[in-house]
Image (tube, protein in one colour):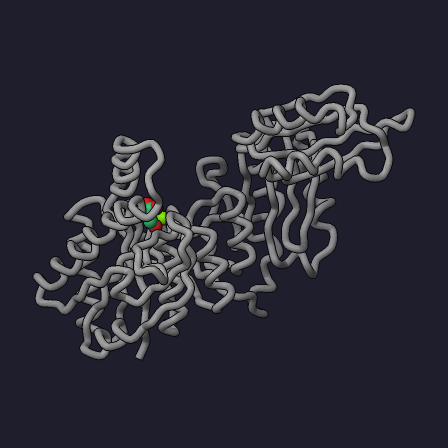
Amino acid sequence: MTLIVKKYGGSSLSSVAKLRNIAKTTHDLHHNSNQKIVVVLSAMGSSTDKLVDLSIRAVKDANKRDYDMLLSSGEQVSIAMLSMLINDLGGRAIPLTGWQAGIKTDSSHANARIKSINTKRIKAELRKNNIVVIAGFQGITSEDNISTLGRGGSDTTAVALAAALKADECHIFTDVDGVYTTDPRICSKARRLDLLTYEEMLEMSGLGSKVLQLRSVEFASKYNVPIRVLDAHKNNALGTLITKEEKKMEGAIISGIAFTKDEAEIMIKGVKDQPGVAAKILGPIGTAKIEIDMIVQNVGSNGLADFTFTVSRNTLKNAIKVIENNKKSMGYSSFDTKNNIVKVSLIGVGMRSHAGIASKMFKCLAKNKVNIRMISTSEIKISVVIDQKNLEIAVQALHNEFKLDKK
Ligand code: ASP
Ligand code: MG
């Protein structure tokens, strides 16, 4: 007998009509197969945003415990609604909040981590042949307070439950039909991927494909839970299966192209070209909790060098302040910043066993007159920073060069 965890996101739950459809398909599946089904739900539509707004209107800085009590209420609405609808069809559904489902978290309210799941109640309900409908995004702390897992946290609830229950697959239903080779709005030839590894997905989502909460993919990778991303409005589609690397995946060298627009570059000019300089510059930046991504140091003349790095655009103002305040200790002559840059990354586990990918990428960009400002590489990724105006041409050219439109 198979056990499937099915998770639906807020946009697939934005009306009673949509909930009714989900109730019908879930009930039919349960009725016509001998699958055991656990459903995890987000809050309906944008109701979590509305709850956030409500708390902001009440107080400036809400107590985190109270805030979680408020935010978790959205999911309680959706699980009650879906259970009602399934039961009205003559089906068998039982709604459970996070704590009823045994989901224990740490005490970092608003961004709690799941510590353990006591599956006793869920298993008892499954044995009674019930469809178990569980509130995503929430749990309970060791002090018996309700906690939430951070925005988008229902994905993590679903994967964690799939791991704890040893489910055969975890299906994440959303408003796209899978993970694409790149953003179809930038490249019309973007293609849905049948298969992707956890590592690739982490790079894809870390770099801007916002299909799944990152933590859910880390969780899935750790406990080896196969995730299938599916379109909530299509029946019997295949979606994209995200799983551990297997032999049969060796065919694809490159799986996708990700990009992020929220980059900013800082060039610190005329620093001494001697040991310790990088630490002197990056130390205060790190202390200010500003994350640095790429770093380049150009060896200049007269013992002076330029030191360039990128930060995310929303931290640029802060970084400038830190650099101005630390002029003496950093020992530079001037600095410059640049906002209109983007990072484009080629991702694929096949890079490990294939040489020449980087040079092919750089040649392709050169042929298309795209100037590369910075480069960084890892085992399964090559990233370049380029001017924002070249984003589309770069993504389209690379998509063609690596024939990502063909299986
Ligand atoms: N409802 C929560 C949110 O909007 C959790 C989720 O959707 O996964 O962030
Ligand atoms: Mg989501």
